[in-house]
Length: 382
Image 1 (cartoon, rainbow, N blue to C red):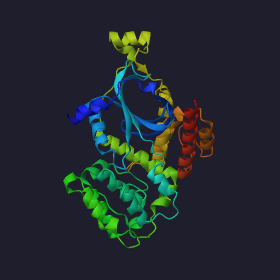
Image 2 (image 1 turned 60 degrees about the vertical axis):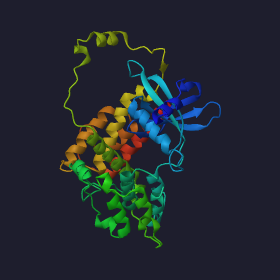
Image 3 (image 1 turned 90 degrees about the horizontal axis):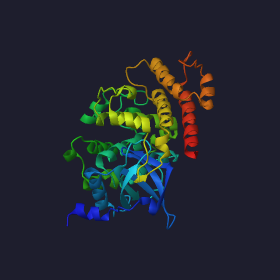
Image 4 (image 1 turned 180 degrees about the vertical axis):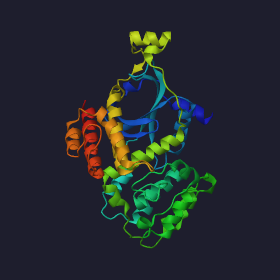
């Protein structure tokens, strides 16, 4: 029997709602396929993580590969997989989806844990590295653990994102800025170099990583790293994560200069009928996902995050003040109802379209961060 067939046998076709309650408002994190949510098994009240994928061969292969290695202690376990037709409120009809119930990981994010250490050392970073993942990602993680920011930035990493970041990643072009890396061992730099190889065949193998001197060094390596201090500034971390994610997303999808015709000018009978009648839930599993009902709120949050990114990491080559006014104006259009934001901006001489005086960017980033937290908490409580 083939491996794919064995996976198909593992997948249940009964409704997940017969055995689990899904908490649509609590997100554990977000990946490229969408948020990971919390679900609770009715019979035991145990909490699990729920990942939802469109049911297609690629997704079933992902499940198959995950199951093949899920017995490893450092890889999250798959508990159950459901194949259900699911219709979200923004969709016109149900779609076949895989609902993957996984072990709940309660430890929190790695970089948040690092920020809580007063003295995060190179030895501690070495020990974290020994725990199992994708080797290119491991190289990025090691780099960030050691210095506090990702590779593939310009020399002035804390201020600008180079427009040629895509080229830098594709060619594996990065460096070790002297300010943070002068006190970091050559062994650590060596493992980063050997992991961040563009061609997979040139990268260290798992066996090579485990045998590397940096992971097996008997020296103390008690030098305190700059990363924990840098990660304590949550506005900086949020800006770096946002900007880095956007740049990586842009690498995946080529820009398509498409414009959509306004719905009221579309001469398609099906669309006209849907516009007149609206969409009705089918007899399939219809999931009332508040996240999809609050699209405007999510857009508003994205606009605020753009402001933080511009405050912390303005795009290279831009007129920084003009660009900040532009992204702030966009964010203001979607968030005029936020009193916390309105009061904070008044103190920074915002007139509704631009700042009349020079802005303290870190202070602005903190105000916007608080507005994001307030709006997110309000959204989660509804």
